[in-house]
Amino acid sequence: MNEDLRNIVLGVVAAGVSALLGWTVRTHLWRRRLRRKQAFFGLPGNSECLLVVNRDPGADGAVHRFDVFALLELSALIKDCGANAQILQHDVAQQGFGERTEFCVGGPGSNRRTAAHLSSLLPGVKVNTDVEPGPDRGAFQIGSERYRLESGGTEYVLLARLTAGEGGRPVFLFCGQRAITNQAATRYLARHHEKLARRHGSNSFVLLLKVVNTQAYGPDVVELVADVTRAAQSPAPAVTPDPDPAPATATAPARKSHRAKG
Picture (cartoon, rainbow, N blue to C red):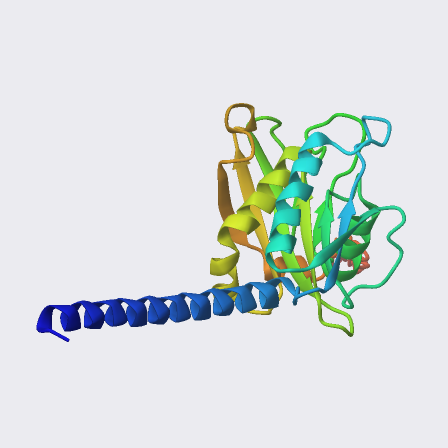
């Protein structure tokens, strides 16, 4: 074997070793990223989860198209984790939580399951579900703060990861003031789940998101307003009645003045 042929063979071998090493490193990083993603969502390979969908009260019980888009966003996440999903309507999902990961889409006005989760797990959150139009229709009350709906302008949605129950699998809530904000929250989760996993780990969190100008930007422009976990999980502040007025104190009788007779 002459020197040129030996150099070619050594080059091919070195390239093969480098390619194998690079493939091994990439595979290791991909598997580690997948394990972290599965742990965050509570979705190990071949596991089962629930997609609880609401019904649009203004469309004869049909699912709003933006909620359908939200389900598609979640389905892609579930597929990436190698898990399987079962879709249930909110009024037939009568089971506990913790055994299977649950993704619950919609506010309490259109999703009974969300209403139950808010009552049980987030007592500090109140949502105005009045049918009649008014300034507080759809408003969020979180602790002592109120967030009103400005349809098409500024709209809010709660994105929550809650752990409860014996199984320890999380419940993800997408509780928006309108259907388009539900989709915005699912898209935010899909884009930022790695950062959220690094920040919160396996702990519960509740984030208040603001969706800006949906008339122009749809569900794409989303801002994080605040982490409201503590306020949402604390009991709502009780309204204290006005104290009873203090009883009137009896006044001492006036003394009569006596004039000395001259």
